[in-house]
Image (tube, rainbow, N blue to C red; front, top):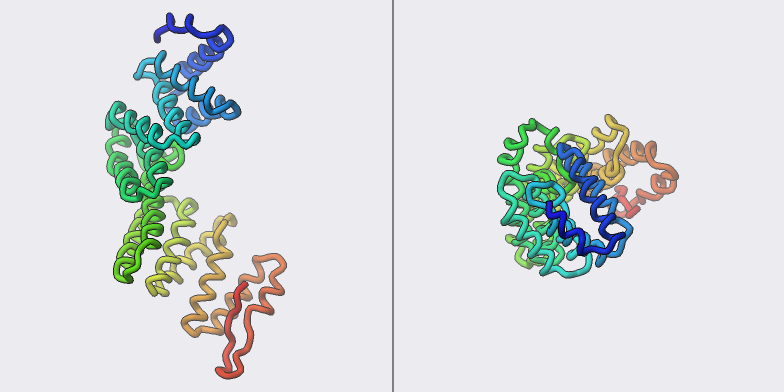
Amino acid sequence: MKKDQFSRLKEDHNKALSDIINFFLVFPEDDPEQYSAYFKSIFHDIDLLLAEQYYSEIIKIVSQDCFIYWFASLALADCFNLQGFYKKSISAYSRIIKQVGNVSLFLLLAYSGRADVYFHLDEYDKALHDYAAIIESYPIIKENYSLEGKDFYKKLPFDSDPISAHERRANIYYFKSMNEKEESRILEINKMAIDEYSEAIQRSEETRCEQCYLERARLYVKINKLNDAIKDYTKIIKMAEKTKVSTSFLEAYKERIEIFIKKGKYLKAFLELLKKSKVKESSFDYLTNAFVKDKEKNKYIILEE
């Protein structure tokens, strides 16, 4: 710690900075997520330019063997990003990646942050590379921290673990497919996205992967693998029945109904609507208006909700 540099600061600024550093020097380092939350909360309500000044000074004063050095470095990169200084942000993240070493949690955080900036700039291939780097680096870092199984994920700030990396890669493939015109290429990219969602699901706890099931089901519909889509929608519904907590099961019901209609299973679709009506408030209008009779085909068809 370079204490002599404190004398150059104004007294009030000096005291604030000193307290921040001293607080984090004694803060337990075995829970990076909590450490990160506390660090961000301190600077949450101050101006970005002032926050940038604090981060820069902490980096100058504190040695690299302290957690706060790396959190300040990451926060500075984030700060540049929030101000729209994307080149500065990428440069700051890249400096961390180069300096921190390949067994540090901060490597995952830096790759995640830089990937987000690349994604924002529509530089999809660079973002894919950084998310792949998270997946590749994770086993080494996990071994270094001597933690087993999914407990390790709980020690990582959100979006810096392999599950999130696979999910983000799938999202990028989705956006890439929207820019393609050739059907064969669109199909290829959608299959890549499905593979990424499948990897995320395989690594994840059930309650966390609900959105992955939903998005994978939608991709299955796009490539006309309707039976696979039904399986994923059914999985979401069963998880909701088990956990009683879900953000996607009404969508799963609705989209599974649409598949049954597409497959010509009208009675099955109507029974699905009956189930859905029991779990949705004010669903009577939906239920009564969902089907109209097609007099020419003597069948019932679904209307948009």
